Length: 354
Ligand SMILES: *Cc1c(COP(=O)(O)O)cnc(C)c1O
Image 1 (cartoon, protein in one colour):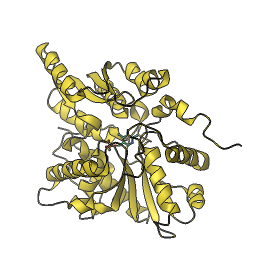
Image 2 (spheres, protein in one colour):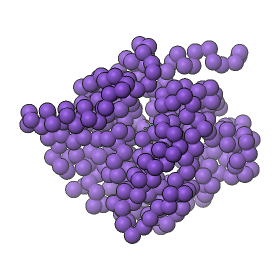
Image 3 (tube, protein in one colour):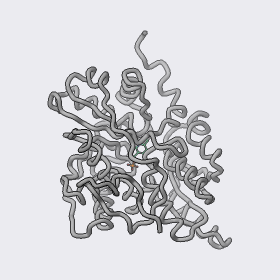
Image 4 (cartoon, helix red, strand yellow):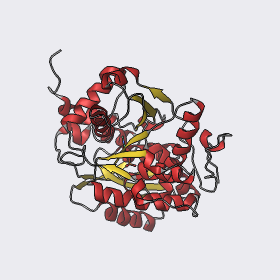
């Protein structure tokens, strides 16, 4: 068994989580940077916005799923698996990064992808993540939007096992409690870094899709004795109530893996549904504006499905005076750049004249 080599867990910081009994395959180079966004902050008029650059994670184009995959691939290898099967939407970043991590670990990968987003244009169906899945050598199963992807994946895993393969199945977004450990480690990393940089954050803002990143951060903060209500998530998939229930359950199960003596309160899981729009993967005007704003003020890229909508929530909160002047907030940049190419048409003709 290899141990977590993440700097946050091994440094002399007071914010230390011992995750060493969970197998981990290192996929990150070390802590991702925390950076200020001065021009953007100025445009928003008062709040100091910082970003945690989880888009700067090296493998397979990068993104937040690599933190979960460190523990998921770690567990798969510890079980002797030679094949990973996972599920997602056609443009799933999780599927793409699972394919990359499997390739790097010398494992086979099968992706069960549904057409859950109401799009049938060529760019959505064939460009972006789906192109990369193919390059990483994954086999893609193309299912209709109404299909039960996990049931299909479990049946496919049985069929592969009958052929002698050793199969590890990852749930949607890699958000099993073991996968969520990656973001518990990130909570310690954020505290260690902000302590070292002399920064403290009034709020940490994230997107909530499958809820694993939010749940993992919440579990990590709870394990460190910090109120997980520090995290504010904008849901991009479920309505607030089911998103809260799923995230709360995952956070509790993740915390039980770290410190069974601690508990999380339901009211510490903060979820805002105002940026969801018509649903998962359906663009909103606020998302388009947020993507253009961050790109044009700071040269940084959000994605159209997750971080663009969550950042739109941050923009709206800042404009409505929800943050005090001079307050520091941290936005977790989660990657998803390939999605921009699948959503080219969503950005066509939406900008003002320049
Ligand atoms: C998956 C994903 C998220 C959301 O993470 P969850 O753990 O599924 O809630 C956010 N941003 C990007 C780019 C993602 O791919």
